[in-house]
Image: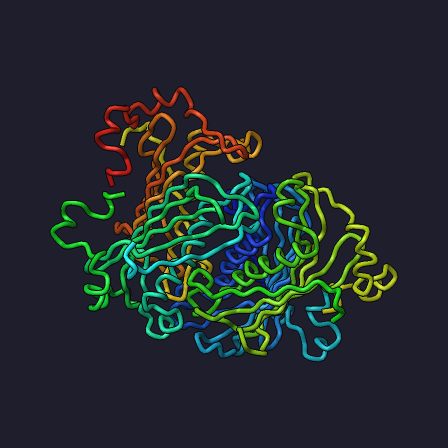
Length: 154
Length: 154
Length: 154
Length: 154
Protein backbone atom coordinates (compact mmCIF):
# COMPACT_ATOMS: atom_id res chain seq x y z
CA UNK A 1 0.00 0.00 0.00
CA UNK A 2 1.48 3.45 -0.85
CA UNK A 3 2.73 5.10 2.29
CA UNK A 4 0.49 8.13 1.82
CA UNK A 5 -2.67 6.04 2.05
CA UNK A 6 -4.38 6.86 5.35
CA UNK A 7 -4.84 3.74 7.46
CA UNK A 8 -6.05 2.92 10.95
CA UNK A 9 -6.06 0.00 13.35
CA UNK A 10 -8.32 -0.20 16.39
CA UNK A 11 -9.00 -2.94 18.90
CA UNK A 12 -12.20 -4.01 20.67
CA UNK A 13 -12.83 -6.67 23.28
CA UNK A 14 -16.21 -8.33 22.68
CA UNK A 15 -18.55 -7.47 25.55
CA UNK A 16 -21.92 -8.95 26.54
CA UNK A 17 -23.70 -6.03 24.87
CA UNK A 18 -22.02 -7.03 21.56
CA UNK A 19 -23.44 -10.55 21.60
CA UNK A 20 -26.90 -12.02 21.12
CA UNK A 21 -28.74 -15.18 22.12
CA UNK A 22 -27.19 -16.99 19.13
CA UNK A 23 -23.96 -17.01 21.14
CA UNK A 24 -21.97 -14.78 18.78
CA UNK A 25 -21.47 -11.07 18.06
CA UNK A 26 -24.66 -9.44 16.76
CA UNK A 27 -24.36 -8.20 13.17
CA UNK A 28 -25.05 -4.57 14.11
CA UNK A 29 -22.35 -4.51 16.80
CA UNK A 30 -19.58 -4.73 14.20
CA UNK A 31 -20.82 -1.50 12.64
CA UNK A 32 -20.34 0.30 15.95
CA UNK A 33 -16.77 -1.04 16.12
CA UNK A 34 -16.21 0.01 12.50
CA UNK A 35 -17.57 3.49 13.27
CA UNK A 36 -14.93 3.91 15.95
CA UNK A 37 -12.21 2.86 13.47
CA UNK A 38 -13.70 5.10 10.77
CA UNK A 39 -13.86 8.09 13.10
CA UNK A 40 -10.17 7.69 13.97
CA UNK A 41 -9.29 7.22 10.31
CA UNK A 42 -11.21 10.42 9.52
CA UNK A 43 -9.36 12.22 12.32
CA UNK A 44 -6.07 11.20 10.68
CA UNK A 45 -7.38 12.72 7.45
CA UNK A 46 -8.19 16.03 9.12
CA UNK A 47 -11.72 15.56 10.45
CA UNK A 48 -11.38 16.00 14.20
CA UNK A 49 -14.47 15.22 16.30
CA UNK A 50 -14.11 18.39 18.36
CA UNK A 51 -13.92 20.59 15.25
CA UNK A 52 -16.88 18.80 13.68
CA UNK A 53 -18.97 19.54 16.77
CA UNK A 54 -18.14 23.24 16.14
CA UNK A 55 -18.41 23.49 12.36
CA UNK A 56 -21.24 20.95 12.04
CA UNK A 57 -19.51 19.68 8.89
CA UNK A 58 -19.53 15.90 9.10
CA UNK A 59 -18.49 13.06 6.83
CA UNK A 60 -21.76 11.10 6.65
CA UNK A 61 -22.16 7.51 5.57
CA UNK A 62 -23.86 7.28 2.16
CA UNK A 63 -23.58 3.53 1.66
CA UNK A 64 -22.46 0.52 3.70
CA UNK A 65 -21.59 -2.92 2.33
CA UNK A 66 -20.67 -5.49 4.96
CA UNK A 67 -19.96 -9.20 4.61
CA UNK A 68 -20.20 -11.49 7.60
CA UNK A 69 -17.77 -14.35 6.89
CA UNK A 70 -17.06 -15.88 10.29
CA UNK A 71 -18.50 -15.09 13.71
CA UNK A 72 -16.67 -13.64 16.71
CA UNK A 73 -17.80 -14.32 20.26
CA UNK A 74 -17.64 -13.12 23.87
CA UNK A 75 -14.18 -12.12 25.05
CA UNK A 76 -12.57 -12.18 21.61
CA UNK A 77 -10.14 -9.33 21.04
CA UNK A 78 -10.89 -7.96 17.59
CA UNK A 79 -8.59 -5.88 15.41
CA UNK A 80 -10.34 -3.52 13.00
CA UNK A 81 -8.04 -2.48 10.14
CA UNK A 82 -9.21 0.39 7.96
CA UNK A 83 -7.91 2.42 5.04
CA UNK A 84 -8.95 5.08 2.59
CA UNK A 85 -9.92 3.00 -0.41
CA UNK A 86 -10.78 5.48 -3.17
CA UNK A 87 -11.76 9.10 -3.73
CA UNK A 88 -14.35 10.55 -6.10
CA UNK A 89 -15.32 14.17 -6.57
CA UNK A 90 -17.99 14.36 -3.88
CA UNK A 91 -17.50 11.19 -1.94
CA UNK A 92 -14.82 8.80 -0.76
CA UNK A 93 -14.70 5.12 0.11
CA UNK A 94 -13.18 3.51 3.17
CA UNK A 95 -12.61 -0.22 3.64
CA UNK A 96 -12.33 -2.33 6.79
CA UNK A 97 -11.39 -5.85 7.80
CA UNK A 98 -12.02 -7.41 11.19
CA UNK A 99 -9.83 -10.22 12.54
CA UNK A 100 -9.18 -11.81 15.89
CA UNK A 101 -5.98 -10.48 17.44
CA UNK A 102 -3.04 -12.54 16.23
CA UNK A 103 -5.03 -14.42 13.58
CA UNK A 104 -5.01 -14.13 9.80
CA UNK A 105 -8.62 -15.18 9.12
CA UNK A 106 -10.81 -12.30 8.06
CA UNK A 107 -14.14 -12.39 9.93
CA UNK A 108 -15.74 -9.29 8.46
CA UNK A 109 -15.13 -7.09 5.44
CA UNK A 110 -16.85 -3.75 5.05
CA UNK A 111 -16.82 -0.85 2.61
CA UNK A 112 -18.48 2.48 3.22
CA UNK A 113 -18.80 5.58 1.07
CA UNK A 114 -18.99 8.95 2.75
CA UNK A 115 -19.83 12.49 1.70
CA UNK A 116 -19.10 15.78 3.45
CA UNK A 117 -22.28 17.38 4.67
CA UNK A 118 -23.13 20.67 6.40
CA UNK A 119 -25.60 19.81 9.15
CA UNK A 120 -28.38 20.27 10.12
CA UNK A 121 -29.39 21.43 6.60
CA UNK A 122 -27.76 18.32 5.12
CA UNK A 123 -26.07 20.33 2.35
CA UNK A 124 -23.41 18.28 0.54
CA UNK A 125 -19.97 19.91 0.25
CA UNK A 126 -17.05 19.31 -2.11
CA UNK A 127 -14.17 17.26 -0.79
CA UNK A 128 -11.07 19.29 0.23
CA UNK A 129 -9.19 20.57 -2.85
CA UNK A 130 -5.82 19.20 -1.78
CA UNK A 131 -7.15 15.63 -1.83
CA UNK A 132 -6.74 15.55 -5.63
CA UNK A 133 -2.98 15.71 -5.12
CA UNK A 134 -2.68 14.09 -1.76
CA UNK A 135 -4.64 10.97 -2.66
CA UNK A 136 -4.11 11.03 -6.44
CA UNK A 137 -3.28 7.31 -6.41
CA UNK A 138 -6.74 6.67 -4.96
CA UNK A 139 -8.60 9.10 -7.17
CA UNK A 140 -11.20 7.54 -9.43
CA UNK A 141 -11.28 9.51 -12.68
CA UNK A 142 -14.64 10.39 -14.09
CA UNK A 143 -14.46 8.29 -17.23
CA UNK A 144 -13.26 5.31 -15.29
CA UNK A 145 -16.21 5.56 -12.95
CA UNK A 146 -18.54 4.75 -15.77
CA UNK A 147 -16.66 1.54 -16.43
CA UNK A 148 -16.07 0.33 -12.95
CA UNK A 149 -17.72 2.18 -10.13
CA UNK A 150 -16.87 1.17 -6.56
CA UNK A 151 -20.34 -0.27 -6.11
CA UNK A 152 -19.75 -2.83 -8.81
CA UNK A 153 -16.21 -3.65 -7.93
CA UNK A 154 -16.66 -5.66 -4.75
CA UNK B 1 -54.72 5.89 40.76
CA UNK B 2 -56.36 9.34 40.40
CA UNK B 3 -57.70 9.71 36.88
CA UNK B 4 -55.63 12.82 36.25
CA UNK B 5 -52.35 10.95 36.69
CA UNK B 6 -50.64 10.67 33.27
CA UNK B 7 -50.02 7.03 32.38
CA UNK B 8 -48.75 5.11 29.39
CA UNK B 9 -48.59 1.56 28.11
CA UNK B 10 -46.30 0.43 25.31
CA UNK B 11 -45.47 -2.96 23.90
CA UNK B 12 -42.21 -4.43 22.57
CA UNK B 13 -41.42 -7.80 21.04
CA UNK B 14 -37.96 -8.97 22.14
CA UNK B 15 -35.66 -9.05 19.13
CA UNK B 16 -32.20 -10.59 18.68
CA UNK B 17 -30.57 -7.20 19.24
CA UNK B 18 -32.24 -7.08 22.68
CA UNK B 19 -30.65 -10.33 23.86
CA UNK B 20 -27.12 -11.38 24.80
CA UNK B 21 -25.10 -14.58 24.95
CA UNK B 22 -26.60 -15.35 28.37
CA UNK B 23 -29.82 -16.20 26.51
CA UNK B 24 -31.92 -13.39 27.97
CA UNK B 25 -32.61 -9.69 27.38
CA UNK B 26 -29.52 -7.56 28.01
CA UNK B 27 -29.90 -5.19 30.95
CA UNK B 28 -29.38 -2.06 28.82
CA UNK B 29 -32.06 -3.06 26.28
CA UNK B 30 -34.84 -2.52 28.84
CA UNK B 31 -33.78 1.10 29.17
CA UNK B 32 -34.32 1.64 25.46
CA UNK B 33 -37.82 0.16 25.79
CA UNK B 34 -38.46 2.35 28.82
CA UNK B 35 -37.27 5.42 26.90
CA UNK B 36 -39.91 4.76 24.26
CA UNK B 37 -42.58 4.50 26.95
CA UNK B 38 -41.23 7.59 28.72
CA UNK B 39 -41.20 9.61 25.49
CA UNK B 40 -44.84 8.76 24.86
CA UNK B 41 -45.75 9.54 28.45
CA UNK B 42 -43.99 12.91 28.07
CA UNK B 43 -45.90 13.52 24.83
CA UNK B 44 -49.14 12.97 26.76
CA UNK B 45 -47.93 15.58 29.26
CA UNK B 46 -47.29 18.14 26.52
CA UNK B 47 -43.72 17.42 25.41
CA UNK B 48 -44.05 16.51 21.74
CA UNK B 49 -40.91 15.20 20.02
CA UNK B 50 -41.41 17.44 17.00
CA UNK B 51 -41.73 20.57 19.14
CA UNK B 52 -38.70 19.58 21.21
CA UNK B 53 -36.63 19.29 18.03
CA UNK B 54 -37.62 22.93 17.35
CA UNK B 55 -37.41 24.50 20.81
CA UNK B 56 -34.46 22.36 21.95
CA UNK B 57 -36.16 22.20 25.35
CA UNK B 58 -35.94 18.58 26.47
CA UNK B 59 -36.85 16.66 29.61
CA UNK B 60 -33.50 15.03 30.42
CA UNK B 61 -32.94 12.07 32.69
CA UNK B 62 -31.26 13.12 35.94
CA UNK B 63 -31.35 9.75 37.72
CA UNK B 64 -32.32 6.19 36.86
CA UNK B 65 -33.03 3.39 39.34
CA UNK B 66 -33.79 0.03 37.77
CA UNK B 67 -34.32 -3.37 39.38
CA UNK B 68 -33.96 -6.54 37.36
CA UNK B 69 -36.26 -9.09 39.03
CA UNK B 70 -36.87 -11.75 36.37
CA UNK B 71 -35.45 -12.11 32.87
CA UNK B 72 -37.31 -11.88 29.57
CA UNK B 73 -36.11 -13.66 26.47
CA UNK B 74 -36.30 -13.80 22.65
CA UNK B 75 -39.81 -13.44 21.22
CA UNK B 76 -41.44 -12.39 24.51
CA UNK B 77 -43.99 -9.64 24.08
CA UNK B 78 -43.35 -7.13 26.84
CA UNK B 79 -45.76 -4.55 28.19
CA UNK B 80 -44.14 -1.41 29.63
CA UNK B 81 -46.51 0.43 31.98
CA UNK B 82 -45.50 3.93 33.02
CA UNK B 83 -46.91 6.77 35.07
CA UNK B 84 -46.02 10.18 36.43
CA UNK B 85 -44.97 9.33 39.97
CA UNK B 86 -44.25 12.64 41.68
CA UNK B 87 -43.46 16.26 40.94
CA UNK B 88 -40.95 18.56 42.63
CA UNK B 89 -40.16 22.17 41.80
CA UNK B 90 -37.48 21.54 39.19
CA UNK B 91 -37.81 17.87 38.46
CA UNK B 92 -40.36 15.10 38.24
CA UNK B 93 -40.31 11.34 38.68
CA UNK B 94 -41.73 8.70 36.39
CA UNK B 95 -42.13 5.02 37.26
CA UNK B 96 -42.26 1.94 35.03
CA UNK B 97 -43.02 -1.75 35.30
CA UNK B 98 -42.29 -4.36 32.65
CA UNK B 99 -44.34 -7.57 32.37
CA UNK B 100 -44.89 -10.24 29.77
CA UNK B 101 -48.12 -9.68 27.91
CA UNK B 102 -50.98 -11.36 29.76
CA UNK B 103 -48.92 -12.09 32.88
CA UNK B 104 -48.98 -10.51 36.34
CA UNK B 105 -45.33 -11.07 37.30
CA UNK B 106 -43.28 -7.90 37.29
CA UNK B 107 -39.94 -8.48 35.53
CA UNK B 108 -38.50 -4.99 35.83
CA UNK B 109 -39.24 -1.92 37.92
CA UNK B 110 -37.70 1.42 37.11
CA UNK B 111 -37.89 4.99 38.40
CA UNK B 112 -36.38 7.98 36.66
CA UNK B 113 -36.22 11.64 37.60
CA UNK B 114 -36.19 14.23 34.85
CA UNK B 115 -35.53 17.95 34.59
CA UNK B 116 -36.40 20.39 31.82
CA UNK B 117 -33.28 21.63 30.09
CA UNK B 118 -32.59 24.14 27.32
CA UNK B 119 -30.07 22.51 25.02
CA UNK B 120 -27.31 22.75 23.92
CA UNK B 121 -26.38 25.10 26.81
CA UNK B 122 -27.87 22.62 29.28
CA UNK B 123 -29.66 25.41 31.21
CA UNK B 124 -32.24 23.96 33.64
CA UNK B 125 -35.75 25.42 33.39
CA UNK B 126 -38.68 25.53 35.84
CA UNK B 127 -41.44 23.01 35.32
CA UNK B 128 -44.62 24.40 33.73
CA UNK B 129 -46.58 26.59 36.18
CA UNK B 130 -49.86 24.76 35.71
CA UNK B 131 -48.36 21.49 36.97
CA UNK B 132 -48.79 22.72 40.56
CA UNK B 133 -52.55 22.53 40.09
CA UNK B 134 -52.75 19.82 37.49
CA UNK B 135 -50.66 17.32 39.39
CA UNK B 136 -51.21 18.66 42.91
CA UNK B 137 -51.84 15.12 44.19
CA UNK B 138 -48.34 14.17 43.02
CA UNK B 139 -46.58 17.32 44.21
CA UNK B 140 -43.92 16.76 46.82
CA UNK B 141 -43.91 19.74 49.16
CA UNK B 142 -40.56 21.23 50.02
CA UNK B 143 -40.54 20.48 53.72
CA UNK B 144 -41.56 16.91 53.06
CA UNK B 145 -38.66 16.46 50.69
CA UNK B 146 -36.23 16.92 53.55
CA UNK B 147 -37.86 14.08 55.42
CA UNK B 148 -38.44 11.63 52.62
CA UNK B 149 -36.88 12.35 49.29
CA UNK B 150 -37.79 10.15 46.32
CA UNK B 151 -34.29 8.67 46.29
CA UNK B 152 -34.78 7.22 49.74
CA UNK B 153 -38.29 6.07 49.26
CA UNK B 154 -37.82 3.13 46.95
CA UNK C 1 -45.52 -8.16 -7.08
CA UNK C 2 -46.81 -11.77 -7.20
CA UNK C 3 -49.22 -12.39 -4.36
CA UNK C 4 -47.15 -15.24 -2.99
CA UNK C 5 -44.14 -13.02 -2.34
CA UNK C 6 -43.74 -12.61 1.43
CA UNK C 7 -43.86 -8.95 2.43
CA UNK C 8 -43.90 -6.97 5.65
CA UNK C 9 -44.56 -3.43 6.82
CA UNK C 10 -43.50 -2.11 10.22
CA UNK C 11 -43.59 1.33 11.75
CA UNK C 12 -41.14 3.12 14.07
CA UNK C 13 -41.29 6.53 15.71
CA UNK C 14 -37.82 8.09 15.82
CA UNK C 15 -36.70 8.36 19.45
CA UNK C 16 -33.79 10.27 21.00
CA UNK C 17 -31.71 7.08 21.11
CA UNK C 18 -32.07 6.85 17.30
CA UNK C 19 -30.55 10.29 16.67
CA UNK C 20 -27.05 11.73 16.96
CA UNK C 21 -25.47 15.14 17.45
CA UNK C 22 -25.80 15.80 13.70
CA UNK C 23 -29.54 16.26 14.35
CA UNK C 24 -30.69 13.26 12.30
CA UNK C 25 -31.12 9.51 12.71
CA UNK C 26 -27.80 7.72 13.20
CA UNK C 27 -26.89 5.37 10.34
CA UNK C 28 -26.78 2.30 12.61
CA UNK C 29 -30.26 2.95 14.05
CA UNK C 30 -31.93 2.15 10.71
CA UNK C 31 -30.42 -1.33 10.83
CA UNK C 32 -32.13 -1.98 14.15
CA UNK C 33 -35.45 -0.89 12.64
CA UNK C 34 -34.77 -3.08 9.60
CA UNK C 35 -33.98 -6.04 11.87
CA UNK C 36 -37.41 -5.72 13.46
CA UNK C 37 -39.04 -5.71 10.00
CA UNK C 38 -36.82 -8.60 8.86
CA UNK C 39 -37.66 -10.66 11.94
CA UNK C 40 -41.38 -10.23 11.30
CA UNK C 41 -40.91 -11.04 7.61
CA UNK C 42 -39.03 -14.19 8.63
CA UNK C 43 -41.86 -15.09 11.05
CA UNK C 44 -44.29 -14.86 8.12
CA UNK C 45 -42.02 -17.24 6.24
CA UNK C 46 -42.05 -19.78 9.06
CA UNK C 47 -39.18 -18.70 11.32
CA UNK C 48 -40.84 -17.91 14.64
CA UNK C 49 -38.64 -16.29 17.30
CA UNK C 50 -39.89 -18.64 20.00
CA UNK C 51 -39.10 -21.73 17.94
CA UNK C 52 -35.69 -20.38 17.01
CA UNK C 53 -34.86 -19.94 20.68
CA UNK C 54 -35.62 -23.68 21.04
CA UNK C 55 -34.07 -25.14 17.89
CA UNK C 56 -31.18 -22.67 17.79
CA UNK C 57 -31.62 -22.61 14.01
CA UNK C 58 -31.43 -18.99 12.96
CA UNK C 59 -31.45 -17.12 9.66
CA UNK C 60 -28.21 -15.12 10.01
CA UNK C 61 -27.24 -12.06 8.03
CA UNK C 62 -24.46 -12.86 5.55
CA UNK C 63 -24.30 -9.49 3.79
CA UNK C 64 -25.89 -6.07 4.20
CA UNK C 65 -26.02 -3.31 1.57
CA UNK C 66 -27.64 -0.09 2.73
CA UNK C 67 -27.95 3.26 0.96
CA UNK C 68 -28.65 6.41 2.93
CA UNK C 69 -30.51 8.73 0.53
CA UNK C 70 -32.28 11.23 2.77
CA UNK C 71 -32.18 11.69 6.53
CA UNK C 72 -35.01 11.19 9.01
CA UNK C 73 -35.15 13.05 12.30
CA UNK C 74 -36.63 13.08 15.81
CA UNK C 75 -40.34 12.32 15.97
CA UNK C 76 -40.63 11.15 12.37
CA UNK C 77 -42.87 8.13 11.96
CA UNK C 78 -41.05 5.77 9.63
CA UNK C 79 -42.57 2.94 7.59
CA UNK C 80 -40.22 0.04 6.85
CA UNK C 81 -41.43 -2.01 3.86
CA UNK C 82 -39.76 -5.34 3.31
CA UNK C 83 -40.06 -8.29 0.95
CA UNK C 84 -38.41 -11.55 0.03
CA UNK C 85 -36.32 -10.51 -2.96
CA UNK C 86 -34.70 -13.69 -4.27
CA UNK C 87 -33.82 -17.23 -3.24
CA UNK C 88 -30.65 -19.21 -3.94
CA UNK C 89 -29.80 -22.72 -2.82
CA UNK C 90 -28.24 -21.86 0.52
CA UNK C 91 -29.20 -18.26 1.04
CA UNK C 92 -31.96 -15.79 0.34
CA UNK C 93 -32.17 -12.04 -0.14
CA UNK C 94 -34.56 -9.61 1.50
CA UNK C 95 -35.05 -5.98 0.48
CA UNK C 96 -36.27 -2.98 2.47
CA UNK C 97 -37.29 0.61 1.88
CA UNK C 98 -37.81 3.23 4.58
CA UNK C 99 -40.15 6.17 4.08
CA UNK C 100 -41.84 8.73 6.29
CA UNK C 101 -45.45 7.78 6.96
CA UNK C 102 -47.67 9.15 4.22
CA UNK C 103 -44.76 10.19 1.95
CA UNK C 104 -43.46 8.68 -1.28
CA UNK C 105 -39.79 9.66 -0.97
CA UNK C 106 -37.55 6.74 -0.20
CA UNK C 107 -35.07 7.64 2.57
CA UNK C 108 -33.24 4.34 2.85
CA UNK C 109 -32.88 1.24 0.69
CA UNK C 110 -31.35 -1.93 2.05
CA UNK C 111 -30.71 -5.47 0.83
CA UNK C 112 -29.56 -8.30 3.04
CA UNK C 113 -28.68 -11.90 2.28
CA UNK C 114 -29.31 -14.53 4.92
CA UNK C 115 -28.38 -18.16 5.45
CA UNK C 116 -29.87 -20.74 7.80
CA UNK C 117 -27.40 -21.65 10.52
CA UNK C 118 -27.42 -24.14 13.40
CA UNK C 119 -26.01 -22.28 16.39
CA UNK C 120 -23.78 -22.22 18.34
CA UNK C 121 -21.68 -24.41 15.99
CA UNK C 122 -22.48 -22.07 13.12
CA UNK C 123 -23.19 -24.96 10.76
CA UNK C 124 -24.96 -23.79 7.57
CA UNK C 125 -28.18 -25.63 6.65
CA UNK C 126 -30.06 -26.03 3.37
CA UNK C 127 -33.08 -23.83 2.85
CA UNK C 128 -36.46 -25.58 3.33
CA UNK C 129 -37.23 -27.93 0.37
CA UNK C 130 -40.65 -26.46 -0.31
CA UNK C 131 -39.17 -23.04 -1.05
CA UNK C 132 -38.21 -24.24 -4.55
CA UNK C 133 -41.90 -24.44 -5.39
CA UNK C 134 -43.28 -21.85 -3.06
CA UNK C 135 -40.95 -19.08 -4.19
CA UNK C 136 -40.13 -20.43 -7.67
CA UNK C 137 -40.67 -16.94 -9.15
CA UNK C 138 -37.90 -15.64 -6.87
CA UNK C 139 -35.53 -18.54 -7.34
CA UNK C 140 -32.21 -17.66 -8.92
CA UNK C 141 -31.06 -20.55 -11.07
CA UNK C 142 -27.51 -21.66 -10.75
CA UNK C 143 -26.29 -20.86 -14.24
CA UNK C 144 -27.85 -17.42 -14.03
CA UNK C 145 -26.02 -16.71 -10.82
CA UNK C 146 -22.70 -16.84 -12.61
CA UNK C 147 -23.85 -14.14 -14.98
CA UNK C 148 -25.61 -11.83 -12.61
CA UNK C 149 -25.33 -12.56 -8.94
CA UNK C 150 -27.35 -10.48 -6.48
CA UNK C 151 -24.18 -8.78 -5.24
CA UNK C 152 -23.55 -7.29 -8.67
CA UNK C 153 -27.09 -6.44 -9.46
CA UNK C 154 -27.68 -3.45 -7.19
CA UNK D 1 -8.89 2.87 49.76
CA UNK D 2 -7.43 -0.40 51.11
CA UNK D 3 -4.99 -1.84 48.60
CA UNK D 4 -6.93 -5.09 48.33
CA UNK D 5 -10.04 -3.37 46.98
CA UNK D 6 -10.43 -4.30 43.32
CA UNK D 7 -10.48 -1.20 41.12
CA UNK D 8 -10.51 -0.45 37.41
CA UNK D 9 -10.01 2.49 35.09
CA UNK D 10 -11.11 2.49 31.46
CA UNK D 11 -11.19 5.20 28.82
CA UNK D 12 -13.70 5.96 26.04
CA UNK D 13 -13.69 8.59 23.33
CA UNK D 14 -17.24 9.85 22.71
CA UNK D 15 -18.35 8.79 19.23
CA UNK D 16 -21.34 9.90 17.13
CA UNK D 17 -23.25 6.78 18.17
CA UNK D 18 -22.91 7.89 21.82
CA UNK D 19 -24.61 11.25 21.24
CA UNK D 20 -28.17 12.33 20.49
CA UNK D 21 -29.91 15.28 18.88
CA UNK D 22 -29.66 17.19 22.16
CA UNK D 23 -25.95 17.60 21.35
CA UNK D 24 -24.66 15.55 24.30
CA UNK D 25 -24.04 11.91 25.22
CA UNK D 26 -27.27 9.92 25.40
CA UNK D 27 -28.08 8.66 28.89
CA UNK D 28 -28.01 4.99 27.85
CA UNK D 29 -24.56 5.27 26.23
CA UNK D 30 -22.88 5.76 29.62
CA UNK D 31 -24.22 2.38 30.72
CA UNK D 32 -22.46 0.70 27.81
CA UNK D 33 -19.20 2.42 28.84
CA UNK D 34 -19.79 1.37 32.44
CA UNK D 35 -20.42 -2.23 31.34
CA UNK D 36 -17.00 -2.30 29.72
CA UNK D 37 -15.41 -1.02 32.93
CA UNK D 38 -17.48 -3.45 35.03
CA UNK D 39 -16.52 -6.40 32.85
CA UNK D 40 -12.83 -5.60 33.27
CA UNK D 41 -13.29 -5.11 37.00
CA UNK D 42 -15.01 -8.50 37.15
CA UNK D 43 -12.12 -10.04 35.18
CA UNK D 44 -9.73 -8.69 37.82
CA UNK D 45 -11.88 -10.41 40.45
CA UNK D 46 -11.70 -13.75 38.65
CA UNK D 47 -14.61 -13.64 36.20
CA UNK D 48 -12.95 -13.97 32.79
CA UNK D 49 -15.21 -13.48 29.75
CA UNK D 50 -13.83 -16.56 28.01
CA UNK D 51 -14.46 -18.79 31.04
CA UNK D 52 -17.95 -17.37 31.47
CA UNK D 53 -18.77 -18.26 27.86
CA UNK D 54 -17.81 -21.85 28.81
CA UNK D 55 -19.32 -22.21 32.28
CA UNK D 56 -22.34 -20.01 31.57
CA UNK D 57 -21.94 -18.62 35.08
CA UNK D 58 -22.31 -14.87 34.81
CA UNK D 59 -22.43 -11.98 37.26
CA UNK D 60 -25.75 -10.38 36.27
CA UNK D 61 -26.88 -6.88 37.11
CA UNK D 62 -29.65 -6.90 39.72
CA UNK D 63 -29.98 -3.14 40.20
CA UNK D 64 -28.55 -0.01 38.63
CA UNK D 65 -28.59 3.49 40.13
CA UNK D 66 -27.12 6.19 37.93
CA UNK D 67 -26.98 9.96 38.42
CA UNK D 68 -26.43 12.26 35.48
CA UNK D 69 -24.71 15.35 36.92
CA UNK D 70 -23.05 17.02 33.93
CA UNK D 71 -23.15 16.15 30.24
CA UNK D 72 -20.26 14.97 28.06
CA UNK D 73 -20.19 15.58 24.34
CA UNK D 74 -18.69 14.46 21.01
CA UNK D 75 -14.94 13.87 21.09
CA UNK D 76 -14.62 14.04 24.89
CA UNK D 77 -12.23 11.47 26.30
CA UNK D 78 -13.96 9.96 29.32
CA UNK D 79 -12.33 8.10 32.19
CA UNK D 80 -14.53 5.53 33.90
CA UNK D 81 -13.24 4.69 37.40
CA UNK D 82 -14.75 1.67 39.09
CA UNK D 83 -14.32 -0.26 42.31
CA UNK D 84 -15.83 -3.09 44.32
CA UNK D 85 -17.99 -1.19 46.78
CA UNK D 86 -19.45 -3.80 49.13
CA UNK D 87 -20.15 -7.51 49.39
CA UNK D 88 -23.22 -9.27 50.76
CA UNK D 89 -23.89 -12.99 50.94
CA UNK D 90 -25.46 -13.41 47.53
CA UNK D 91 -24.68 -10.18 45.77
CA UNK D 92 -22.05 -7.48 45.55
CA UNK D 93 -22.04 -3.79 44.70
CA UNK D 94 -19.75 -1.96 42.31
CA UNK D 95 -19.46 1.81 42.01
CA UNK D 96 -18.37 4.00 39.09
CA UNK D 97 -17.53 7.62 38.39
CA UNK D 98 -17.13 9.17 34.96
CA UNK D 99 -14.93 12.22 34.38
CA UNK D 100 -13.34 13.94 31.41
CA UNK D 101 -9.70 12.99 31.07
CA UNK D 102 -7.56 15.34 33.15
CA UNK D 103 -10.53 16.95 34.95
CA UNK D 104 -11.79 16.58 38.52
CA UNK D 105 -15.50 17.21 37.91
CA UNK D 106 -17.59 14.09 38.22
CA UNK D 107 -20.08 13.86 35.34
CA UNK D 108 -21.75 10.58 36.23
CA UNK D 109 -21.97 8.40 39.32
CA UNK D 110 -23.34 4.89 39.17
CA UNK D 111 -23.82 1.97 41.54
CA UNK D 112 -24.80 -1.52 40.46
CA UNK D 113 -25.48 -4.67 42.42
CA UNK D 114 -24.72 -8.03 40.85
CA UNK D 115 -25.48 -11.66 41.60
CA UNK D 116 -23.84 -14.81 40.27
CA UNK D 117 -26.23 -16.72 38.07
CA UNK D 118 -26.07 -20.05 36.23
CA UNK D 119 -27.53 -19.42 32.78
CA UNK D 120 -29.74 -20.16 30.95
CA UNK D 121 -31.75 -21.51 33.90
CA UNK D 122 -31.09 -18.26 35.80
CA UNK D 123 -30.24 -20.13 39.02
CA UNK D 124 -28.58 -17.82 41.57
CA UNK D 125 -25.29 -19.06 43.06
CA UNK D 126 -23.43 -18.20 46.26
CA UNK D 127 -20.52 -15.82 45.96
CA UNK D 128 -17.07 -17.49 46.10
CA UNK D 129 -16.21 -18.62 49.66
CA UNK D 130 -12.86 -16.85 49.78
CA UNK D 131 -14.50 -13.45 49.29
CA UNK D 132 -15.42 -13.40 53.01
CA UNK D 133 -11.72 -13.15 53.84
CA UNK D 134 -10.46 -11.43 50.74
CA UNK D 135 -12.93 -8.56 50.86
CA UNK D 136 -13.73 -8.66 54.58
CA UNK D 137 -13.37 -4.85 54.78
CA UNK D 138 -16.17 -4.56 52.22
CA UNK D 139 -18.41 -7.24 53.70
CA UNK D 140 -21.76 -5.99 54.91
CA UNK D 141 -22.76 -8.01 57.96
CA UNK D 142 -26.31 -9.23 58.12
CA UNK D 143 -27.44 -7.23 61.13
CA UNK D 144 -25.95 -4.09 59.69
CA UNK D 145 -27.88 -4.59 56.49
CA UNK D 146 -31.12 -4.14 58.34
CA UNK D 147 -29.99 -0.76 59.58
CA UNK D 148 -28.37 0.59 56.48
CA UNK D 149 -28.75 -1.38 53.29
CA UNK D 150 -26.87 -0.28 50.20
CA UNK D 151 -30.10 0.71 48.50
CA UNK D 152 -30.82 3.30 51.16
CA UNK D 153 -27.31 4.53 51.55
CA UNK D 154 -26.88 6.56 48.40
